Length: 294
Image 1 (cartoon, rainbow, N blue to C red):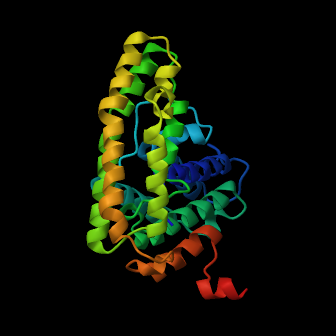
Image 2 (image 1 turned 90 degrees about the vertical axis):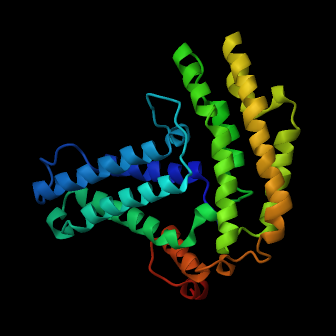
């Protein structure tokens, strides 16, 4: 299984919203050590803010109001390193807190949720999802056209922000290609059958007349002729060519190199990835065999 940045971040922000709901600004009515509670709240706030910083576009899928609409998920290797450092720092903060000191307080729940989320994310690193991010169920080629339909364009500022966001998208797509190339080199790939479906899905998107493409939705919802021309140029001259390059790479180079079997155990450290995925989805420290036998 692979992880689409928007889908992944949406799950993170929903968790973060739950954490902040459990973590009020004051703890006057809660038992437990005040300084420890403050540390939990600070970690929860940082987790929430960082999640939005990491993938601001997921706010539209989570019911979160944001001030700006020009951000795009950074899928570069350098950004991944930074994200893992932030996760490690937050997990260290939470693990330094004695749960017993929070007994009877909302922060006890917040700390437990945050510890589970961050520990799960760290365990899942063994999967190297970024190196085989191809999915016919929730891939970026499906979620970003949805995002285009949610992009605010009502004001001049919003239209400027829309152009700023979508001017970054071709580079995002090219980076996805580079990540997959690195994955092949390292022995990671998505299943061949999945990749073929994704190629077909991208073909369907590229076959649409430009005015019917969901990627043109920001322009279709605006009467600003200057913005419409600029958005059309972005889609025609940058975004569609980048997606076509990615599609051709998948078809010509990735499909022949992709794994034949569906099981992630065919990837390096695949068994460890499978076990980490089970723990992530169930929150239980049980092996795949135990889950199957139960």
